[in-house]
Image (tube, rainbow, N blue to C red; front, top):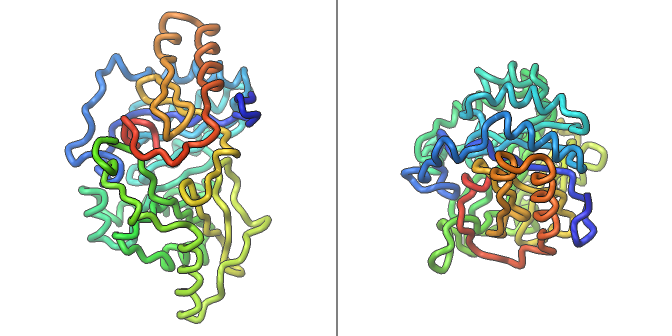
Length: 333
């Protein structure tokens, strides 16, 4: 599939739920989002049908997100079903990792190939503050479970927020002794758009990736460690826009995702599906297309029509838009 700007679109991110067992400060309000009605959420079999239709027109890769996807009942069965759809080459998941120790073996057996685990701080007290309710040890146990189950690659996603004063070198060093791929993501203005800055976001909290890269190298030198070098063929499998580096001899890599300082919109390859059945052409756009009604009332041709309509509406760039009507947990992280 090609969009109107000539980009190949072969990747669909699917939010299974807007619910989560965390309340991360940049993702949702402290009291959580207003819960969708049961009938407004796509059923597991509806998601499977959508993936089947999407695969028929060129979608090859699926990522399951949330909220927290592992709180969605039936997620293992869904993974099993969509991995068997002709044309689907990869199924992965983004999770906070807390439920992985009890579920990862079933997910691996069902066909899940890789996982991204969100981990925004390595300090236990700060972790509880950022998540408002989480325990760092639970997230770390999820990482260990993913490695033990043989998921490959296992990526760690850290949203970089200047005011949190995260220990970036310690994050990067997670990649040295184990095949972990640490990715630093610039803090994005996604969420409530009222006021000057949405969802607590402000430009002063953004650390551009180039600055962060230099900072990690500076701190590495101060500890007598080598600097990061281009990962070359050591970069992990994936479909995203990260630029990868590694410490010489490391088992894993260090990646930088730069949606603000180094736009990668020209390489965008994805559509997004929200838990309530809306197709979003762009994370930063509030334009959505109703595929739930097409699934329930219109049949395959109607679903394909919605997908192609959304494809044609993909913007050339996010143009530094600040704030979205829906938060990250509702859009699909």
